Length: 203
Image (tube, rainbow, N blue to C red):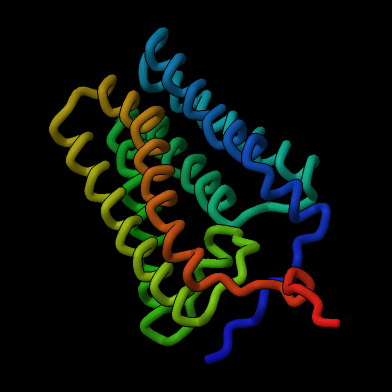
């Protein structure tokens, strides 16, 4: 199967990929979740998280006219499991959300890969251009990693206090994910496709 090349990003795509903007939109709701839980408990914190992820998605759309797949899925999951948390007055539902969402991402990536369709560029909203082998390897690694995140969440919420789980969710997952992403740089550089425009001209 030939994977279509991802052309140079447009200004809108570049804005959508702005690292600072992405970090603020991803970390903002988690920080608000942590602070609210610390001050008022898990149920008010869940409500704040629901509001913040919706707000973050709206800000992303207004600023970039673009909605990445992962934030959309995360937003829907937070609102759904947050609503269940309030309806049943049981914090179990919001604790299960990371397990289920990460498992879905892992299953989608590995399942599609088994049929020869690496979906990583779509799931991670990527503008990278890699060889077919590069996408296959990177997709396999990220698929497994999402299942690792799901397992970590299960271990933490089942063995630790709610406050510890909230701290882990807010400040533990992101460093782990960043470290994993950085560990993939050698693979990306090895299989990266260079634009013809970047190649030296021969006169």
